Structure formats: structure tokens, C-alpha cells
Amino acid sequence: MEHISRSFAVSLQVVHPEIEPDSITAALRLSPKIKHRNGDQKLRLDGTKMDGVYSRTYWSHSLDLCGVVDLVPFLEALLPRLEVHRDFFATISASGGNSELFCGIFLDTNWDEVIPHQLMSRLAALKIDLRLDAYLKLQEGRTPPLQTPASGTPSAGAPVAQPSGAAGR
Image 1: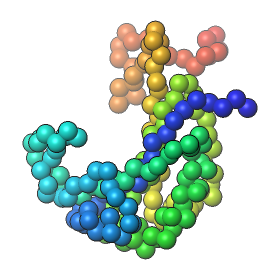
Image 2: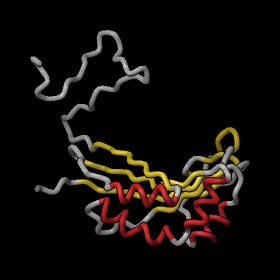
Image 3: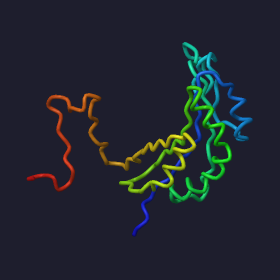
Image 4: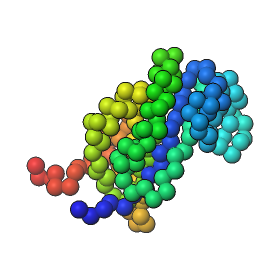
């Protein structure tokens, strides 16, 4: 099978109503790329102040994917490092927070990968959600796919996209 060209960005994220970000850092022994506390002034990534304050603590650690070509083996290899913190993730969940592995997938074409039930079961046991967010790299001259409004119904007069081979069915 031909290997599909894509790259990944994976981060471990913790969101909680009140925990201190430094407590997350200490518990997981990982340095955050982004962190803020409930009540901190909202900031843009460049540090510019925004209106309002954060309503929840947010902590995110970017994982090293140097040389990674397949997502599932990477996640399977990561699990033992997370499983030693099982009690921490359970406490986060039980106290109103959530933990997730955010997986950004950057691709030129379709992406097809099976996430095995064993992997999902181990993540569920840790109370860690898995978020897959795919980003299509548009080549020059290629148009983006149609956007469907949240109502699920295309706007009046908008063309309706059909899967290839669907015409005449």
C-alpha cells in the first residue's frame, strides 16, 4: 500500500475549573508550551492582551514527533508514559476537568487510519479523550471543499457537493 503523505502535531491538554497549571506540570513532569489559570487575563499567542479573563485553567504540552510517520504506533508507544499518571488523570476528571490528546493531521489528500479499540480502551481507562483534527493542505489552483452551515443544509442556491461517482445514482 502506498504511504499517504501527511504530518502530525500531538499535544496533551488539560482543562480544569481551578487547578494551578504548575500543579499539572509537577504531576506529569512535563513542561507546557501554553498555560494559563482560571482568572488570568486573556492573551493572544503573541502576548497582546484581550478583553476578559480565562474561565478555566488550560495546560498544553506539545509532544515530540520527530520521525513519526504513523499516528497509531506513536500513540501506542506514548501510552505507558501516560499510564503511570492514571491517578492524576482520574482526579482531573472527577473534579470537573478533562484531559485530551489533540492530534492535528496535516495532509495533501484523504487520510484513512484505523484507531484500534485496544488503544481507545486504554485511553478511556485513563479518562483521556482523543481529538483528531484534520487540515487539508491546499495546492495552488485547487479550490477548498464546500462549507455547510451548522444547520447542515447548504445555503439556497449553493451547489451541493456529491461524492465522486455519485452522479446518476
